[in-house]
Image (cartoon, rainbow, N blue to C red; front, side):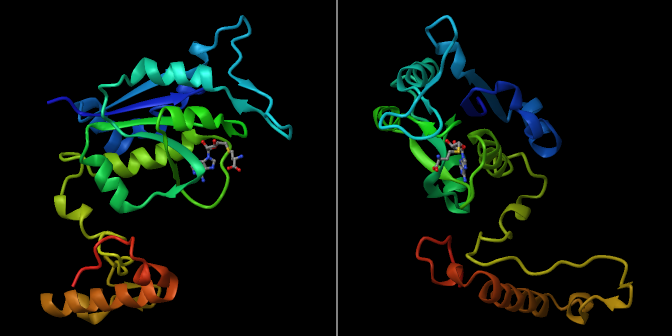
Length: 236
Ligand code: SAH
């Protein structure tokens, strides 16, 4: 079976696989569990200077990625039969959630447009059905780092990538809660000990303690998760 396939449209193909070539995702790439194709948007420029951007219609600062150049770049990698979602990294997009990540992993892969400059011509977003996705309320210099964050979140969930399956299901957000605190040896560190319940051997008590801690942390740090209808499964 072919692996999960990511096609990335960028002006900086050298940025991929980047950190995704190391560790868990790097080994998965070598094993063929996923595949990373880059398309250099600049290869689709038509003038002798290989121009990809131009000044914004209506004036203002910065430059805008041209619809004609980007449109051709997208068509070169994703034809009409390609059913993979077409994403564009954008601070204006819907914030990425663990639920959306799971949804993306269950498909064949993704096509990702990495913006640069002030952004891209709206006509290519509309004409090529690009779904804008944000990784948070701050501005990056380009979509590449955002694409790497999204891909990393997806790749670790591809079947066979993570060792113990359970480690994907007990994380922050998976049950609509932040994760409980962790401890390991030594039993005493700088005068601080491990909560007794965790070394009691009582699995039921451990589970209850963890759930209480998770609820308390979520209430303190992210009360929005407790009321958010769009949050992942809140569990029992
Ligand atoms: N002028 C734009 C920001 C452009 S930043 C605005 O105000 O909305 C340049 C590119 O970086 C964007 O096109 C996008 O691809 C990427 N980018 C910046 N911040 C991002 C974020 N928080 N999430 C996803 N992509 C982002």
